[in-house]
Image 1 (cartoon, rainbow, N blue to C red):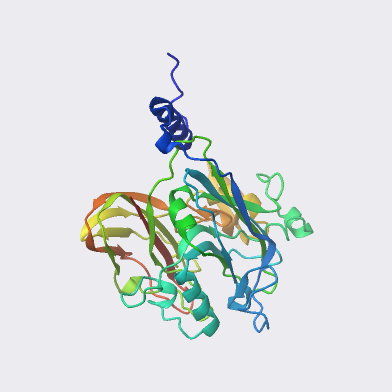
Image 2 (spheres, one colour):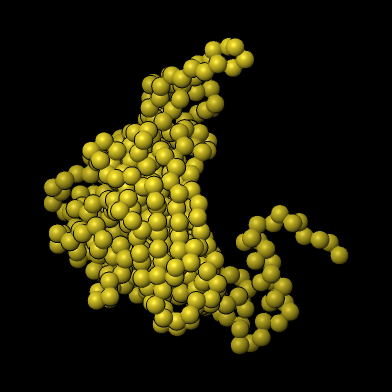
Length: 409
């Protein structure tokens, strides 16, 4: 018998396993699901994300079917994804280029479902509700049924000036030998398949994009969601629950960054109405704070506890940022000298190359997926501690963008 290669990706292996199982059970009639076809939604196509205070159409439905919020730093679009009885491969694709902003900036594509999205939009339009521990449902409140955290679909950090500055004389003059050509744009994708039920059961899915730009030029962005329906008539869609537990990312014009970690752990209570099987936690963290001593550039240990038991201890850190140099034509740099075997060598060190707290300019941020096993019905507590997190100061601006999403059957 021919053996399959060991290094097949997990998606390929799962697909092969599903095929084998379908053949073994001969797709009994009760599982013989009709094909309804693939589906795709263009969220934005070359749309501008920029900061222009005082725009008269801010917070009003645009002719493109979305809302422009926070002086243009946020776009929010109501969509609907069709229900499918068969399993679907659901992919979010994003392309971005600078439209004149030369800096690296935090960004995210996020979503709310139904009432939570309408509540978010209403509060964004009304303003004046941006308390650090409550706005946009950093964590759900017991008396606010519709106030939920934003569920992050894809977190990213913009590169320095990709596209708009890629072909300038200055960029060409300072292009390192390791870069064949500056990239014209950057592309990311995220697999949303595990969230099929959450995405398709909503009557209205409110999908947003946020970039922390402070320039009127900003960035241009394209994004789409595609649903590829399984060809197997017995490939039943998973009955899996998805629930955002918290999100500290600044998603409002008058919201402050979350700066409370130096004061102690962040405790997030949640309740399960029924037992949860095969639970997993998707956890996102990025540290921010400029200059060499800020939390962007210092390694900070994280501790996660579930119901008082340590779930994980680790230090999120990226030391491979130089791999994305081709996306950063406007990155600042300075000469650095060092001695090798008696020879004094000099090279230019780019800011985009420096190691950072779990992110690199021009790259998306992958969630840490933690298995939780089976959880009992009732009250639970997730606790996040960053013991060495530094206070916000006038020179370092330290804060952390944290998000957690629970999945279970």
